[in-house]
Length: 244
Image (tube, rainbow, N blue to C red; front, side, top):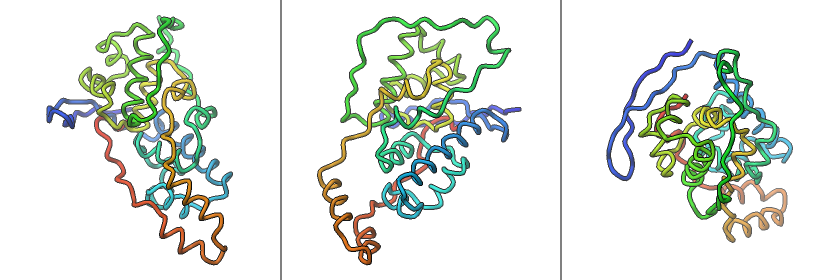
């Protein structure tokens, strides 16, 4: 069972507020399953890269405890923090999500449902200098229009307010991962296909220099060097809008 509550969200550019639904989910909800799958993928990729949890947390500017919660599926990570993690893994979102799939729709959801037909639209040009929220919002708008959904109809489909969807498509929201998966479920689009529209920011030249320096530092000196180059901790869990 889930319980829907309302809370208020301030839009950053206008100061306007709107009510958006947030689900308080039980441990058996599909959203929690997605968090578990995400955590397993993050841990698997980090261990494959042979990076300790402590070192990885320092590299991406997140706390070690936070990374641990993500890997255990206990943290509903925001889009911004997720992209920071993928930057640290140096893994393109499209590739990272190939092992994470939408859960099959229930029998009740399949009643009256049909395979979606998608309009042919000009290819979406990804602006790699845009923020991740802006890339994500542009991708949601593009895929929604391909399905010929109005904003209002799509908001009803994914149980969000129209105002929230509008703000999301304008790149003004930092949605939680559970909301991201709810939106992809409404678009009936696998994560790996959707995230081809969201690209990692190219690493700065200074970051490439720092990586090269780390390789050249003698083993006994790496710990102090890592501390010198560690990114400041990012503000986490700052997402606007519904979390579940």
